[in-house]
Image (cartoon, rainbow, N blue to C red):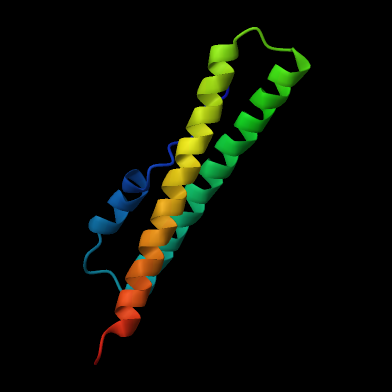
Length: 100
């Protein structure tokens, strides 16, 4: 069974709170890296779920419940990533609406 990486954004953003005096560019780079890592984790879980579904269809697996768990993990991680994206877009739009 493959190890699925942690795709929670909170774990990736912990490093950002430790460097409050860092320049904005460094914080932006860390945030971008956290997002890239999270997206890669979601992609990996989707790949694992696809393989599990293929094994079910081919009849190669005897553990149907494990395959269903992989499919649900992939679904939940994708939904979470969509919500993170929606919140990021909302935050960007709110910043753009601010008057200086």
